[in-house]
Length: 197
Image (cartoon, rainbow, N blue to C red; front, side, top):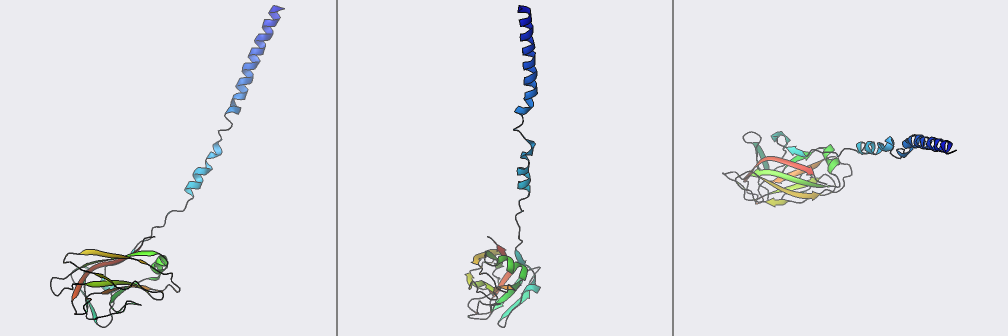
């Protein structure tokens, strides 16, 4: 009897080991390979749009109204003058101006922009003060922002919250080269507008 009991116990032990080895894969079941979709969701996020700023570095882009002049200096530098005492800052402005094209107008509508002008005072007949304005064709303008130039090229800038456009055709950057209206000049290397929010 005792021998049969030992045999029975041995068989029971063997079956227990076999049962444990068969159940082992069930313990790994919670660790599913289908956790990967979370990674796919991250890859599907849209890339952040990088909008290039509007930059003018060409004399052909400049236009003037009566009382202002623009002429090319060396390379990409232009000389602006103004003989106006109180030019308006609306529409194209009554200074020298550049036109901001429609794609950029639509991008900056209802947002804050940073307007930058790289300018310097000429050694001869240079202006002591100039002004810059951002003007929309239909929903307002920044008014003239005044600056005091030095003989070294420097970046002068201001922020403007652009109202939402309606037809969204064109915006303008105007430069009043001499706020005293005495016809003195301002050297300009570049003008740019960048959306910052």
